[in-house]
Image (tube, rainbow, N blue to C red):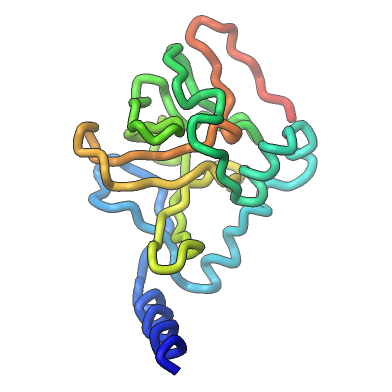
Length: 182
């Protein structure tokens, strides 16, 4: 009975949250995300659909399409220092510039802001009971990228976009621009 009441209390608290989906802007004070069931249902990760997905590796599909997370220090970009632009591995959308990348000590590529205000969207992620998080998705295809946290006072925004390497494709500075074709 006590467990049921505790779960009901947690559910009521989660239900009271009234967060909105917004494109990220460095002027926002806190990451915000949707909380209404209708809003969540309309923004499922399945937005990344065929024919975009066939070129993805199994790990990229697990992260981008299923909302998975790679192990810390395992992705190819966690310690990458080369200058360039990071694009969505599913659709080619520009997500982050390397000059906004910093070493957060977490084992995942971390950025203090997206490339543009519409590069990513933010969504409530209630998957960890008792620890609500804000999910980061590609602003173009809706693929899962990672999460955003307001825990980095060393950055200009105080924000850490913690992104899975599997969701990214680095176009190094000086490389010929490649037109993305899924």
